[in-house]
Amino acid sequence: MQMPMFEAIATGSWLDRRRIAMVARMSLAATVLMFVALFATAHGTRDFLGRPLGTDFSNVWSAGYMALHGHAAEAWDWGAQAAVQRAVHHDPHVPFYGWHYPPPFLLVATLLALLPYVAALVLWQAVTLAAALWLVTRIVPHRLTLLIAAAAPVVMVCLGHGHNGFLTAALLGGGLFLLERRPFAAGLLIGCLVYKPQFAVLLPLVLLASGRRRAVAGAILSAGALVLATYAIWGWPVWQAFLDSLPLTRSVVIEAGNTGWEKIQTAFGAVRALGGSVALAYAVQGAVTAIALLAALIATLRATPAVRNAVVLAAALLSTPYALDYDYTLAGMAIAFLVADGRARGFLRWEASVLAIAWAMPLFARSIAHLTLIPLGVMSLLALFAVAVRRMALLDHAFAGITPSPSRR
Image (cartoon, rainbow, N blue to C red; front, side):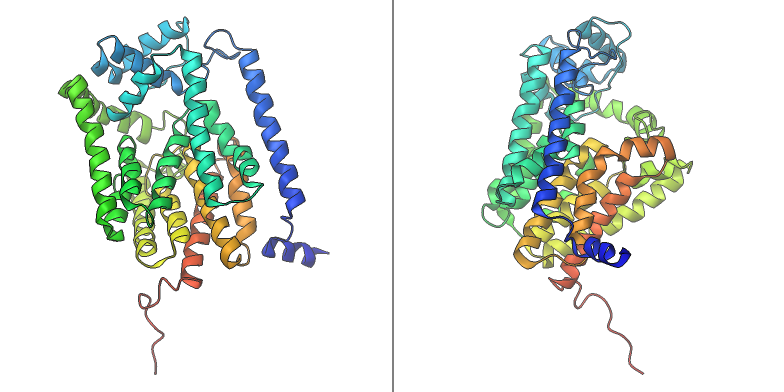
């Protein structure tokens, strides 16, 4: 009896349509019930535990509020931000969530702060989630796609934090999706990720390697326009404040893990959580980043679009020391591209099961890392990355001519 089960996992035959739909409906129902209960038991802008609704959204709305009231540069001052958050939530003991984004994201925050806090949170999550879900249905046109994507545990994680993960996935996934057909529009989308500086190493290299000048031009245009817009509205002080905040952000948030090692699901975070030194964590992260960048460049040059997109999305997460579990919306987008390619060319052994595990892992990864220090989030991401790299090696022959042939005697 063990062999048939083993073979079912290897081939993915256990993932029949009925089982997939049942699990997805259960997950979606749990997500809906959780948020209905969360808002039903809230007290104003705080949940029943005293945390801001949307947790991380607290710093976004507060930064926008500060900008609207002439204190944009103070958004990067932790003391000033904390004071505003306490006033917004009418609680001197409300948890503090720091603002670490580059100034272009302050444009979004300012628009959101024009609305009351809860209305802004709901609109922000609804619009960006809708954009990400719509993109997934374009990548994988199937009647179950919307259900499976909406039910993904990473959606629940991202909604709970009021985070920008949906926007990031829509921009990067959308840019990669359009790269062949509408390269200029693809570049415009990717350039908007200037608010995510942790991807600054990977994405310019991928665009340059693609050889698509229109995509490069689009990225430069949108990124430059966002930077110039912040300078025109608030001047140099916001950029100076952002730059001045970086050493504290690096030492407290990234290196000391003030966010929580169970949330920082990167190679760097895994080493630090297990007691490794900062130097060792950077060394391991450097090695992982180098491998991720190399794979992304090879995929850009030699893989089919869907596989390339999956490699780049996984590499984006692997190449940074700071990515949290709600950033794994990018992994969800990578899964979509691999499913699309699998439906077109067939799945290799183990692939379907690995994709299913990666889809479900955000539900468990943080809790298990907190209790056991086992970095299941990073492990599932590495497995997803391996699936994409294996696929481009075996089906696209991406490494042909790169790996040395066996020596002859």
